[in-house]
Amino acid sequence: MSITRRHVIVQGGVIAAGLLASGLPGTKAFAQIPSIPWRRSLQGLAWNDPIIETYRDAVRLLNALPASDKFNWVNLSKIHGSGDVVKYCPHGNWYFLPWHRAYTAMYERIVRHVTKNNDFAMPFWDWTDNPYLPEVFTMQKTPDGKDNPLYVSSRTWPITQPMPDNIVGPQVLNTILTAKPYEVFGTTRPQGQNSLDPSWVTTSSGTQGTLE
Image (cartoon, rainbow, N blue to C red; front, side, top):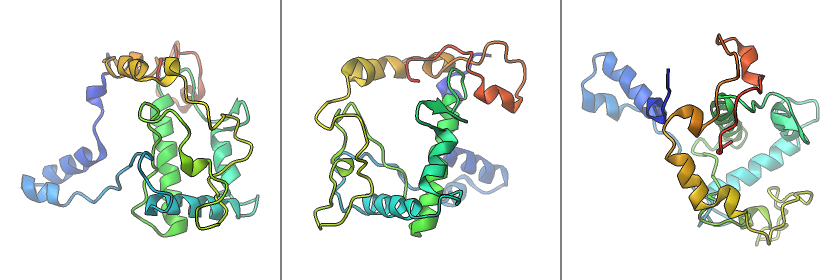
């Protein structure tokens, strides 16, 4: 079967379909869809925007947890991997995108839990809009003189160097977004996959798409 991006159904649509199936009239069904926090671009967000403030607070709180705590910031990152070694992060298969979507959703839920801000959604960095690392990650101190938990001194990408166009430029992303078959847009299934056994999630024998 050839899977296209048109097969992907947004969360709100799935909820609405369930409500419609329950017999509710269309307008009432859509009115009952729960509010879903909106992921916003970092471009234009002020350092003291509630989303950025929540993100800073969460990183500070999670970093302060004991090393033995499963929600410790470092332990959460180790679900993905450590250094150049991946752990559960799938590469070279078509689970790459859905796995990272779930991983991002996990972070969002933990941030909401520790900060009590249920409106938080992970902001994103649009490289095509601004190829430089956003300022909220490069300032050691916030303008009010407090330490900035989003600043990482060991980060290796120079703050004065833009992301390269040949990797994340508009032309590259347009090429990716016009690819219709999912296994071209994302990445192909692992070679030989013949079941939905979870072991295939970390099997890296597929052909990596440009997006990956």
